[in-house]
Structure formats: structure tokens, C-alpha cells
Length: 210
Length: 210
DNA sequence: AAAAAAGAGTTGCAAGTGCAACAAAAAAAC
DNA sequence: GTTTTTTTGTTGCACTTGCAACTCTTTTTT
Image (cartoon, rainbow over all chains, first blue to last red; front, side):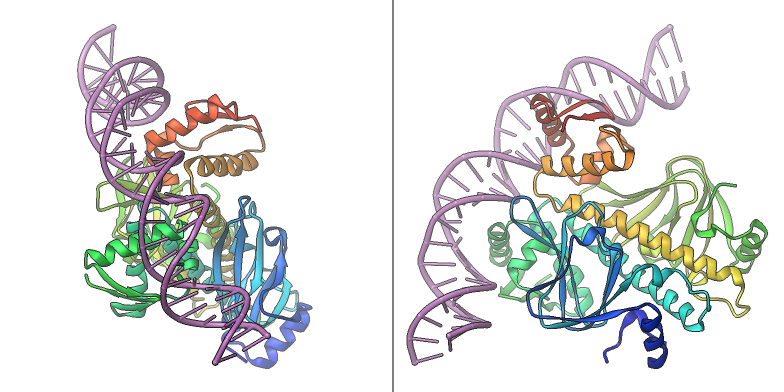
């Protein structure tokens, strides 16, 4: 079993008890299938036991925006998105996902289980982290030019990977989605950055020269 | 005393005890003074007892971006921003602010005070709300055109104020900041929307015709 | 009440960006 | 190994946007 952030510090047997108490269901999803649709209005929480999912918004003009990419042990729920959006949770690989009602997470049950405290402490941690990630994305999105968006993104990544030689966590098409810019315009700007000697790059591999 | 979200459901006397335990300081700030600078790297949390503050990022080119506007009873801390930013918390009106270390919020003290549970439950609530707000902002910022940004923003506001006749919560200059677009370009687009009959507007008052 | 500052509203122009439509390379499927 | 699909890389062009430089109005300060 992978380390599930929400259940960290709780013994396996207690996790099992808790999931029983929550009436949680574990469901299996094939690659590229929908885990939840109209996600903005569900009260469910999903915990990724195995696999990988993406939270996607389909825009009226047919384009799509990646809201978030989640992996093993991650959790998603109403807090992952704005209520006014048309959202889908898609399994990008074969996945096992534990589903239950969000209310269980925040309302302590009557029995006052000791491990419930731990669960809620974990939630504070998880939500804080998500907030920081969101703030990062907002920092990038508020940059006005494609160049500034790219550089801001590369910088943050470089800090995280602790080196100038970074590897993008997704392909260039998805990067353009994440930065909310046109892919071809982004490629053009990457070319400019290369020609000016600010970066070297080939596909997902980028080396910062500043 | 105003309703402070972080302390909701905790009796006044217990709040006082807790703040003692946290070694919290209440400080007074005049209009347009700095509450915290280099905010990204502090471990402090601020609770607004009276007044109003803004979390501001100053960009290298001199422009500024409003990260968040906060009022009475709101809380701010490391979770309010990305660590890589140069941030300031500015009092926009005369304000009283309670400051203490973030660690107190998430680490239950040894005495296991009963009201600490309530505090942490409140934090989950607060963080969830902030996440939703952030998600909203991301939804808006990921729109590609000024028109779509404006309409997305108006829609969300219209839902919140439950009418087509909305009043902006800040002036047009700050709105442009919030949407991260050029003010004059925004004015031009508002004019277009008016001419096409999609909205009526005068200053902060906007009426949606759709 | 007058002066100063802040905000709203406008416009020309240059630069940046999105879109469409490709070709080439790489990866996945057969 | 060949075919198919996905991803990367490129370019011309039109249009949107940012910038600068204003005027006019409203609000705040003295």
C-alpha cells in the first residue's frame, strides 16, 4: 500500500476501520476513463490508491485546461476546484480510487476516535500544500508575457528539483495548457530563449543558463 | 469583538487563554503601513481584529499585483502565498492585527485543550474556502482573452451577489490588477461589451444583460 | 472652498499572441 | 518492422493586448 497523505500516522488497521465507518468504496478505472464528471457539484472525495488522475476543465470552445495532476496517495475533492466550473476527473493510467463523502473528513464521528484527530491534522497539511501549489500557479498566470510565464515556471521547477538542469513533469502540449498559452506561441518563445542563450532545451529537458 | 473565523465556536475566555498560550501580540497599524514584509518567508500568522489588509506582490518592473484582500476576522499566513514571491501585507485602513506563530495552529499543545480541536476544524474550513477562492481566480486567469476574463469574473460575482446588478468589490484599477491585464485594454473591452449590449456599466456598477 | 491626488475613460501605435496549417520526429500500436 | 498516432517544431498573418500619453471626473486633503 502506498503512503496516503490523508492517512499518514494512522495504523493500517485503523485506516481500514475508518474506511468501513465512512462507507468508502474502492473502484478500479482503466486508462483514460472518467472517474467523476460534473465534479464541481459532487460532495465526494477521492483518494488515489494506485495510478494517476488529472482534473480537467473542458472549455466551451473545445480546448481543455489541466487544473491539476495527481498521483498515488493524493486526494481530490470539492476543495480542488471552483464550483462554477465544468470539471472532469480522468484516470490517465490504470487506477484504483477510494471514494467517500467529504463530510466524513471534517466532521468528527460521535465515537470520537483518536485517529480522527490525526486525519484532520493531515487534512490541514494537505490543504496548506494545495494552497501553496495554487499560489504558485497564480504567480505564474499573473505574469503578462509568455516569456515571463515560462521563466517563472522554470525557476520554480529549478528550485524544486534543486538544479539548473530540469525535466518537465509533463509534455510541452500540456505545459502550454498549464500556463494557459497557445502551444505554437510558446514554442516560438522557447526558441527565442534558446537563441538568446538563456536556456538550452530538447523536448522535456531544459537547462537554465542564468 | 468581530467574529473571527479561526476562533469560531470557542468561548471568548478560551480564546484569550489560547492567545496567551500562543504568545500572540496584538499590534495597531495606520492606513497604508506595512504589516509584514518579505512575507513569503515568515512563519507568522496574522488575524485581523479590525480593519482591512491587502497582500501585494511588487513585480520587478514596478507594477503590483493584488494577491488577496482581507477583512475583519480573516487570517493570513504562509499558506496565503507562494514561497518564491516578494510579498507585502499592507493595512489599507487603520487596523488591529493579532500575530503569532503558525506552528501553534497546527500542533496541538501538550495540555490537549478541548478548544484546540475546534481551532483545527476551523482551519480546515478556512483553508478549504481559500482554496475555492484560489480556484476561482485560476479559472479566471486561465481564460485567454480579456473579454473572457471579464465575463468569467462578472459571472462569478453575479452568482455570489445573487443578481444581475453587481457592484465590484474594488475599483477598476485594482480589478485590472486582479485579472492581471492592462487597465486601458480592460476599459476598451468594457466599452466593447457595452456597445454590443452585453452589459451596462458606470464605474463599479455593472448590470449584466445575459 | 480651493488645490491636489486618485480614478475613470479614451486613443494611436507597436509588439506580442492566438490561430491555422503545415512538416518532421518520436512514441505507441499493430 | 511497418503503420498509426502523438508530440515537437515552424511560419505567415490577423487581431488582441500592452504601453504611453493624454483628458475629464471624482474623491480626498489642506
